[in-house]
Length: 310
Ligand code: ATP
Image (tube, rainbow, N blue to C red):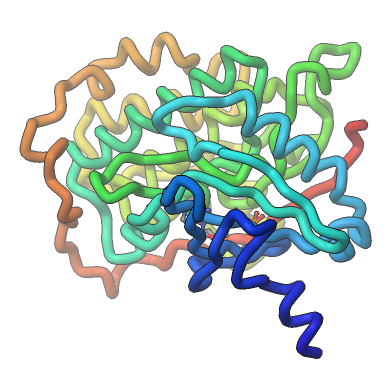
């Protein structure tokens, strides 16, 4: 219906934003290019249908995403400018990030080590900032890491995030959520988990993927994949340097109490190496050219979620 189509994507929203082409979409949202008619600022306008969200009981999650994004202002986190609502939709006016998802870059092949280091340093900086404010992302993966025009990484999609106030009496989080290939063993284990340690496991998977061009834990059978995750059963490819190998192994430690923490990551020799200026200013992303045909595909993974938090 024409009216429905208008409501689906008005060309001018609240008399303030002009909406243009679609930039991407996820399970619940469509994201459009937008322009603030008062300031001229370009934005990414995320549009979420209330009906769909209510139907699957995700309204609390949306409210949480809004509260979290208002709290976490950091140069490596996508900024939320404002939130608007109509009868049937919620609109998030967000910082426009024009370089696409890191996922699309890795799909072309593994990254050069110094570029992987630059992105990993930026990721850890954002994650450290979130954790210092009691925010756990819980769905860190290359699809949720955007790149701006200067190649800076920006974390997005806080739809599954949790606050420290969601900790149960045992001081742990209990919601099983995330994306299977990136999820920590203790999250699958359902006995409660430390959100910070679980995020760092996902960072370990991301670091592996950046350097390898494929996932550390893969299997067509999800139960077999979970078994590998539980055991921390992965191998680093031969081109990993010994320093990279050491850091990845400390991040992908299946025991969260001995897994490396942020302070030690930042102090590790691999992390601390300075980034050559040519990489920092390099707008063209450079890839290692290996024989891709021999390497497994990166899973375009789906979500697991069992909500129990209020
Ligand atoms: P999911 O299914 O992972 O929960 P979602 O429904 O919450 O996703 P997002 O992941 O937030 O939706 O956004 C969908 C897509 O829109 C992203 O993958 C990205 O391509 C694009 N996108 C999102 N935010 C921005 C932004 N700030 N700037 C540019 N593009 C964006």
